[in-house]
Image (tube, rainbow, N blue to C red; front, side):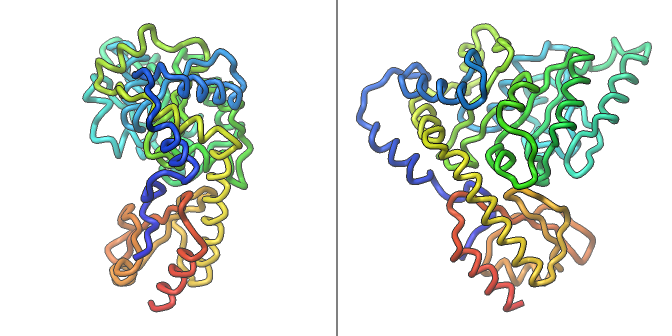
Length: 344
């Protein structure tokens, strides 16, 4: 069976795995204090254009979201997110478990709309009882969104402006950031994201690493004793080398961006296959996640030969499903998908 279930169905990219193997027997200090972590940080700082950025490697996206949000927010503050945002819908209440409410806003194609954000904040402070309510302290975005859509430079700039006006931190979840940066439709580069956001992370788990995310604090705002806070939350990896070696490899010879471009190329070819078979798209995604609507019987038949993800019910007779490409997606995989659809 071929699989388009997610962008982390395979292990590590061969160049990452080779680096892990080459360094495997080196005795190195733990907790991210090894030279490979330092090398990776230098390369990331150069890529984001911030020589003084604070960088910390965490094991996965949920840990990154939970640790960043819980350490930057005061105990009376919550985090604003789109209703479909990852922390709202797919993280099992991890943010609330740490004591911070997710304040949901309506979404448009997976995105927070700046007008809705500004209205929410204006209404909050206009309410004479707002001291008895959860205070918004941060805005959370994911780029790409859960629907593979992208924020434009203008959209992100406007949201950053609103955050500045109301003194909120702007946090961007970049679990799939490579696919945003290499999309044919993006007008945002990595240094621009770093300039506009207070904190963001560069995802590795979904972009060729075995695991790992690189959290980047852009404004000298890494919380004091951050390592201690990470450990207190059970998210500190003793063999921190595992993350440093991988990110050092990902940011050598533009591997991170090469992986992104490959996945985008495969996704564009996949879209042509779906169009040729007359499958309707649920949403137009310019990234590596593609969402199509299948008749339920068709979905059940296709699932016998192709793995994909359930996303949501379109109606009683149809279902929205997701197909994702990644570093391991091949032309042969796409030909097999085409052949399976021909059998419908």
